[in-house]
Image (cartoon, rainbow, N blue to C red):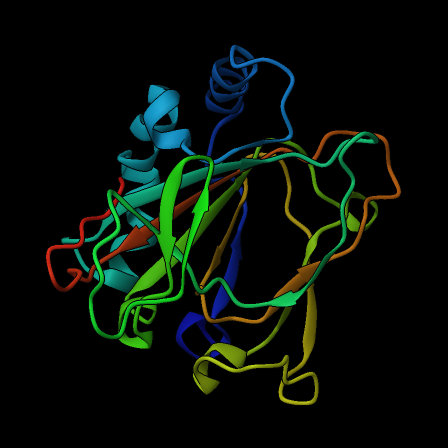
Length: 215
């Protein structure tokens, strides 16, 4: 099976060691944090990587050459921030301002940015690129996915009997590519090591009613 059927793919060796070190240094300059939500805006090096040939080579075969980076987030699991993430779909997008448009809602505010659930058609034209800045083995709280569950659309509860559960271990410099509607979860890490991930969302859809992507 391929990405279209599975809704995810692990691609190792996307970023060279020197590129990973450069991104780690840029992120570390923001201080000791376990999450940064406006990563594309505050860390220019991440924006540059999202526009790199290596990253675009993963995105364009899925979304086409018109896809653009619309949101970046840093995640890190540490002993001080070692959370469990239950089964969920990524249903919200970040926009520049709230405009009440039919089909968009409910609304929330995260890190000072307006977030909204768009129509499923928008989510179906998105893909997330998760670049791992550290090795992520079974002990580091890796993402677990339900293979093919993105094809069921938006659902109120995880279809745990609908697809094979896959543990997505990824090496340093590797990428987990996934669809927003793919059901996924992660457990707390049993290791004290970092699990730093740069999560960049790409979209090929325009938003309705004057809404504009943050990125």
